[in-house]
Image (cartoon, rainbow, N blue to C red):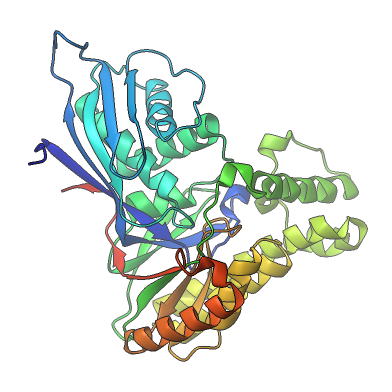
Length: 388
C-alpha cells in the first residue's frame, strides 16, 4: 500500500485561447485552468529528524526517473538539467523573500504528456505552495504567480511573462481569466448563460519539446528589437533591453515605422498589435456569450502565430489546418509556445467522437511516424491550484 501523505496539492495545466506570445511584451491574455494537471503529495519534514535535518527536501516522481534531495535552507546551486530543477527553482525564488527552514518529503505526478500545457509552470506552483505550507508562509494567489514566474525566468532560464502561472493559480471553472500583463490587473469573466456548451480538445502532435532550447527566447528578443527600431526611428530615448516592451509603443508609431525596419521584426510587432485587438474583441465576445466569434478570433490568433510570429512545427500546422475545417470546432490554436507540443480547440461536445476520428485519421496519413505518440484528450475548465 502507498504511503498516505498529510497534504495533497492539485496544480492544473492551462490553455490560452487568445493572447498568444504577447505576455512577455506586456500584452493582454486570456486563459483557463483545466481539469488535468500535476498532483503533489507531501509531508513537511519532521522537526529535529535524526537521519536528515528538518531542512531536507526529498522528492520522488511517478513520471520521471530518479529522486531529488537537497537542503531548503542552503542557496540553490546551478541547474542540473533534471526534473529536480523545478523544486530548486521554487526554493530559489521563495528564499529571496522568506526564510525557509523546513523541507518536505513528497511524490509528484503529471496527468498528461508534457508539451504545450505549461506543465513546468504547474509544477513550479505546486512546489511554491508546498514549501510555503511547510514553513507557515501565507501567500495570496497573485504572490504565488509572481514567485513561480520569477523561478522560471531567473532559475530555469525561460523569459516568459505571467500568463501560464496566472491561469494555473487564478483560474475558475465557470469563467475566463483576462489578464493585463502590463498593470497585472486581472479578472474572471463569468460564462454568459446564453453561451453554448463546449469542451476543450487537446491534440498532441506526438513531438515532445523543450522550450528553453526552442526559438522561444529568440522571439522575445525579436519583439524587443522591433520596439527598439521604432524608438530609434522616432528619435525617442532607448531603454535597456530588459525594460523595452512593445506595449509601451503606440500602434500609430508602428504604422509609421514598419516599412523602415527589417521585415522579420515588423512581422513580430504586427503579431503583437493584432493580437491585442483580437483579445479585446474576444473578451467582448465572451461576455456576450458569442462562442462562434470567440472561436473565430482564436483561429485568427493561430494564423498570426504561423505567419507573423513564425512558430509552429509542420506537425502542429497540419493539426491546425485539419481541425479548422471540422464541424463542431468553434476555434483553436497552438498551445504553449507553439514550437512542438499541442493544439487546443473549443468544441461542441456533440461532435467529439467525429472530430477525434477524422483528425486522427487525417493527421496520421501525413505523419505515420507518430502513430504511437499522437494523442487526443478532452478536458474542461477547472479551478486553479489548490489543496485537496
